[in-house]
Amino acid sequence: MAPRMASPLCQAEISGSRLNASSFVSGKQLVLRRNVVPKTSSGSVARKSARLSVSAAAATAVEARPKTDLILIPGGKGKAVRMKKGDTIKIINTHGTQVVDFWAFSEAEWGQEIMSMHHTRNALQKSTPQAGDTLYTASMKPIMTFLEESGPGCHDTTAAACSYGLYVLQIGEEAAKEHDSCTNNLYNGLKELGLELAEDPRYAYYTPAPFNLWMNVADKPDTSGYIWVMPPKEQKAGDFCIFRAEIDMVAAMSACPWDLGDMNGPGGKPQDCHFQVFGA
Image 1 (cartoon, rainbow, N blue to C red):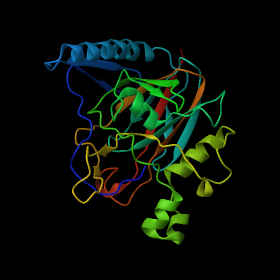
Image 2 (cartoon, rainbow, N blue to C red):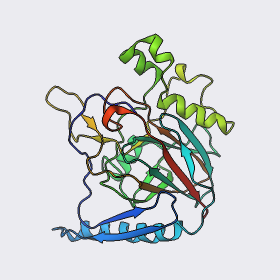
Image 3 (cartoon, rainbow, N blue to C red):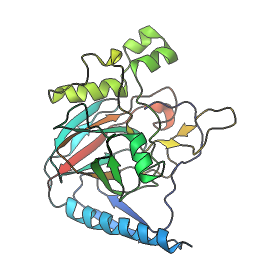
């Protein structure tokens, strides 16, 4: 994904009852703790409690049924994986500073049913999904459920994946040719599975907007209209998000290669991440 400027603001602060989790990067141990913050609205508390019940049960069960080994997403690169309905995927921010662009595609209706961020926002009536929320396609069909996360819950649904065209604007055509992008990473990850959305991502007319995990975006632009972005202040190494497939699908991830600022941590160097798939 692609930022504009840096700022210390955090978009998503999960309030009310919140389930935090710490985990070994190997994914073999999960320790849960519950922090309850009083709310004035009983309805809000009930909704949050329901999400916590789903999250706690899923997080406990998920660790017991690994379907793949822990898989590396090299810093600045991408990976994709097939998932069956009911499978879960745990995406791990191994170093705690890396933004991960995340997509989901229906395998049965390839290129048609795709996880849609703007339709998900409409369905949820919120800007950022949280644990317990469903993620939707453009036809409002559930494609994934966001089961569990650790960390402060700073994610983004508004920024497009960084691309060759964006880097041309930022650093010029010649330098852009040598620069990785989340768009290229998406296409390369799908290609490893024998799938494609277009023959050449540089000339693709449309790349679906990703769910930008651990991307910290201010709620509102400043008075000049700029969007402010920087890493979550509370993020720590080993933080993770867990999602469940609601259909047979393909998940794709890019450890964002943006290195023109500090969005991916001090110095802007992209860092390795990991993921693991668990069976239904």
